[in-house]
Image 1 (cartoon, rainbow, N blue to C red):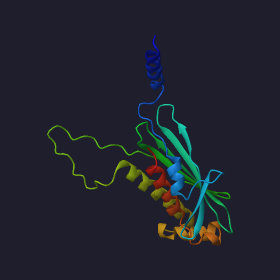
Image 2 (tube, rainbow, N blue to C red):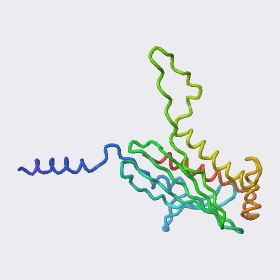
Image 3 (cartoon, rainbow, N blue to C red):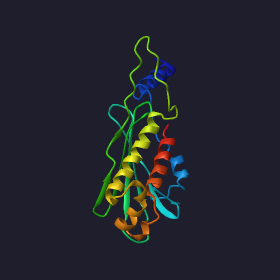
Image 4 (cartoon, rainbow, N blue to C red):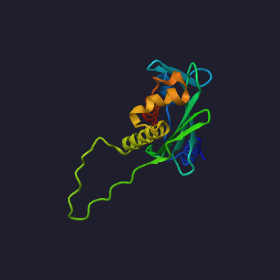
Length: 201
């Protein structure tokens, strides 16, 4: 076997080990968008005069293809309880978002959006039947999932405060401490989710 044939054979064998539709997270660009990763693999930034810290995501390959991405976001309060949130995203091998979940912890308090999964696709129209009009063309499956995820998060905050969702900011001052009075954790977490989705290739 010539050297050229050996190299071609080796390359072909190696390519079989790679997934056909590899999906990855560009953590370098993600870090740059979050004010840069520090040596301890965290990025610190401010939103509405509140300081947050995001940990570099952990990316795990799924057995059936695709990846599971998880990251931790902390609100760095001057006083009161430390609040830690976890974002979990599950992707298919082709890069489609399959499910998402957010968990929030502060002291003994726990909030969980539950697992929000990819919405079922509408059944195709029967033969001879006109397709249903697309009333919301900008509502992609991913956009719908993200909206449902944060609706679930705000609902959990509303349950805690026993008020409607407009009262979610006051939850922080009464449950977590006065330093959370003007914090909007939903905004900070949505910022992180948007960046994670935008830097997944």
